[in-house]
Amino acid sequence: DDDVFPNRKPHRGIYEVALAKADLFPLSSKKCWIHVGDDLANDVGGSADCGAYAVLATVVKHEEAKTIFWSTASEKEIAERKRKDIIAQSKVSARIEKISELIQVVDEILLS
Image (cartoon, rainbow, N blue to C red):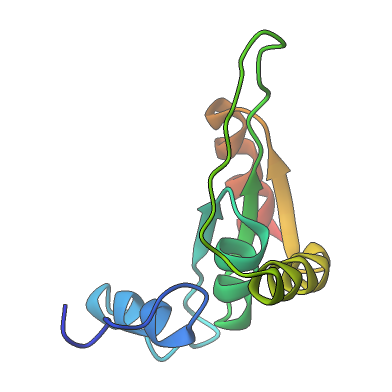
């Protein structure tokens, strides 16, 4: 969408457009949103800064699985990403390892 791009997560404009389209923006005390993501800086940090309860989904990997990581990021960009990851750690509302855990987490958030 033209109102989102060229921005990328964790830019707050992306979340604000999505919330507006779901009739959740601006947020009020009667509205709540939960963002589930697997990336600290982009998902947790970005969404929490826009008022979300941020749920970090971590995938337990099989020992024999081999992951190759390719990045075109500069060393400066990688260092900035690590800094954002550290900041986002404190913004995690809950952590899940399986999607089946999400229902309980949502219930706990809504009851809090």
